Image (cartoon, rainbow, N blue to C red; front, side, top):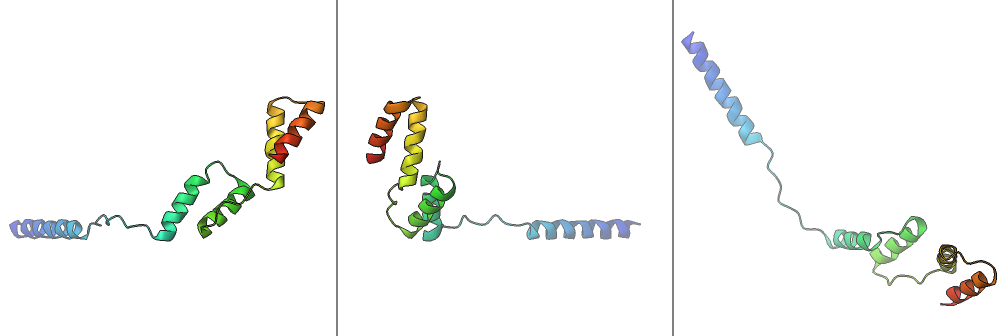
Length: 103
């Protein structure tokens, strides 16, 4: 009986030792590649952009290009949104839209 207990204790110690040695080690934090750094930076700068605007921005940013000028359609959306926020109607709205789209 004592022999069985000793064998069982020895096996338990071996299993514990093997589990301790085989435990996964936490890997050292890897450095980001230049492309990963660029992706992180561009992603941060793209905050608030959605859809096609975001895709276009990310594409040009990842290529290292300067941001493209705002398209006429984007200007129209922005000016229209601003005019609606100011509750402009009629001639006032036309004047505002004209000035906004030029600038």
